[in-house]
Image (cartoon, rainbow, N blue to C red):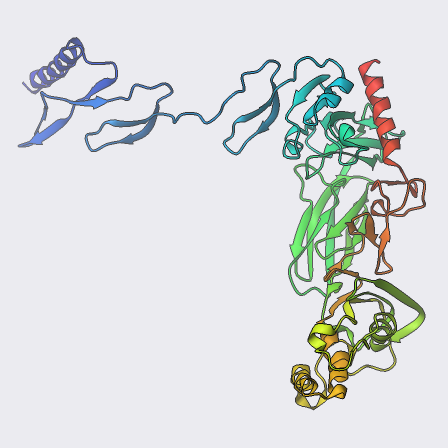
Length: 506
């Protein structure tokens, strides 16, 4: 009997389905049969709930159900992406903030580079397509830099295209040029890449196992533990391999306050350059032996109390009127020797005019000051306001004395005015250590700024011209030092042009 009851219920459900299917239900609807439990026996509702399905392209079943047990669907919103209606449009390969592809339109009627660039200041010539396009701007520069090997990758050869950061004039600026990776020598690679501002750049990379077909020959990869020590650090620092030595998919850095360590995997015999967030450089050779690199993080901005009891081999400074100067000695001199040389001999603080308000008329003194090359001084110096800052003896602060000098000065005491000039104004100076003081900041050695670089003499020095002797890339105007000689940008461009002709068959 139970078997017949079960068959009857099954036939009733099937019949309900055919009734619904035969009643002309929209394909945008479907039925959801429900069951009720009553008196211990299950029965199927004879009136199933109709579920609505939205009619739209690309609808998505969310997998969720509403209170009636119907699936919830979602329709895609209208796409914010548009494609320009123009001939010869080009997909830049970049996307905007909405994830839409960025296109540029070809300018018709210009079949050569000169006529393209001369006709409009917003036209640019693309050497990849050898066509003229409109819409050049600073904003489009990073969008049009393409590098198939994704940056500096010495084990892959690629042809990079983009605009140059160094150019002769406006016409030259608007040429999207290309550079194919190539072997500069048998052991050196000329690698092209897009920098963080979107300009095409070239760097020379050593290949320990040789260079062939525009890429370094891969050698044996080995691991060694690198320990970075942050001397005089008071906060977390980062130690990292320079961009030329970084390996895709490998650990290239570590962080710590006093030190940090990590396993670095690289090519055997590779020379690795290390940098830190507090400045400085370190070097290791990948030979499988664990190595340490030390960075002096006591450089940069500091306070007189931390440097006043030490001796130094030199100092550099900037006066309040913008003048810069430096001095060195063959013997270790105490801190106040250098401070007095800067504050009195060079910058000249005695500019007070009788009857004038020193707060308005004061123009002398030191704006920023850096001591260089810490050494052992025989006599420690007690900190006071005349040495650039720090607390003087007797328990009173400099500010207390300075307030009294100001009051007495405004009352007509010329002696108090002079004391305020000499003893109080200097406390406004920025104190640096082993760095370059300029415009109220302490810049680390190697920092490039406005055609100059921060040298280890503690002062900004003009970047070197081509063929000048060099030790580091940052010393050269082209930012490229090869075999201890600065290489000019024009020479790099000629090499790139030669590679282009070689690989294009011209």
